[in-house]
Length: 170
Ligand SMILES: CC(C)(COP(=O)(O)OP(=O)(O)OC[C@H]1O[C@@H](n2cnc3c(N)ncnc32)[C@H](O)[C@@H]1OP(=O)(O)O)[C@@H](O)C(=O)NCCC(=O)NCCS
Image (tube, rainbow, N blue to C red):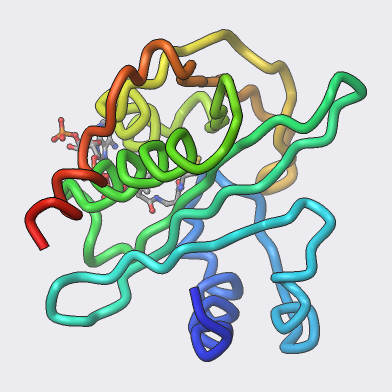
């Protein structure tokens, strides 16, 4: 993501339909959006762009702090009109390739509301495994909701699924 994509990201962050019904509502001022890249979570959003140049969503990596060290986590959202076409699965696979190729990490994790079947399918298809339930993990629309924790380990990834193929073809 480039600095000029910040207004687009801000627009998505402020539209409840982009994060969908299984994510907490969030509101971000322009100033907060401008500071997003300085986040202590080291949040790094990547724009999901189609071949025709249209920007349809994002996949991001960030750190979850833990006394034992930093845990690498990903999150993603697509505009409603582009869902169900396989784009997010492709984006997550590319992100997993990128992170295992560029970081010295053993695992990448993701968490999703228990009711979010589309997101769970994306993680399944990208090779993640369900680790368990995190009870009352998200506060969504006035209620505490359970979430599933997923992860993919380096030894389960084995080799890049998309990234090197794309590089070799170009
Ligand atoms: C979750 C999300 C990113 C998925 O993106 P996507 O590009 O539509 O995902 P894909 O097309 O790669 O795969 C989605 C899969 O879920 C399935 N699916 C979609 N809605 C579903 C539902 N309500 N119940 C069951 N399966 C569903 C699709 O059929 C597809 O499976 P298939 O490949 O076997 O047909 C998208 O729905 C979204 O942006 N949701 C709102 C934000 C969000 O929830 N982000 C995740 C936070 S953890």
